[in-house]
View 1 (tube, rainbow, N blue to C red):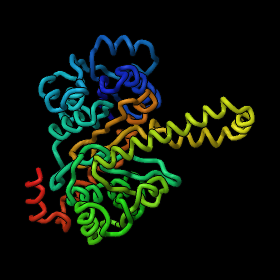
View 2: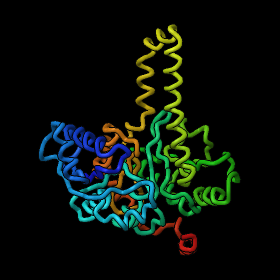
View 3: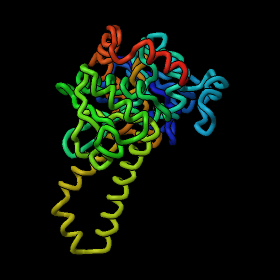
View 4: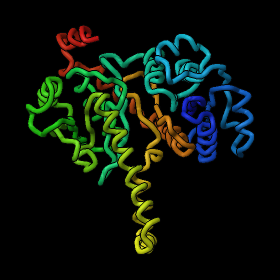
Length: 347
């Protein structure tokens, strides 16, 4: 298994990428990692670590995508960027999967333009695994598509259901649509229409709408929304987790009785912190394109990069892409010629 890693994608690149690659190489998550970026900087940083020398190779790239500019213009201007070179390794079948902690928009655009969409998929969706009270659930879209129509949401439900079934081994995964109420007529026109279509779709186990308060309860295996809602939801959950531990830390520093209690409760706190830690889950999977593209958090540390590499490797081994391609190679009741015309008009 060979992974192409954009070594200049994260906020603190290339340090998390290099250390994360070393951790993954030492744990033998894959046979080869291509570190793509400035050769001189990467070589110097790699010299600080011990790792199997044949497990990591440097691919030189002289440019880096600027996250403050528009993704498409950056991709057009910087043909020798670390992201473009990493994408090309996968496109040319020199690597099996892409991992990048760069701009979501840039990674999505580069992946979509180079790998192409799976036939009949209108738009790719970014899926993440979110921890809950019970087991992790799949949420998509979390940022790839700010505006969606009902057909997009239906396809997210299809791809998310396949993802949950074949990747997380869930039997007949429960799919829910996030909304402002559980009733079928709640929400905007897109949500109401998506509900109507999902209810009639025999290929998925649709359980209806869920509200924001139910997201972390684990009542569904797959949660569907547009990228605008999904991204806000994801960052809100991350913010709550960070604030929760900050409040606990402040209270422990101010109260000696609480410190004694904290010592006794340490195993429970440790478990909670691990469960809410985004670094444990690696990154988001860009569903609906012809190759594996994993988008890690911009604030990723070495542990997160390592887990993203592990996630990419496991994704390839699961043959998940083959299952999605097989699903969409069959006649679809959810995508009719009229819906395709509607999609083209909206684009």
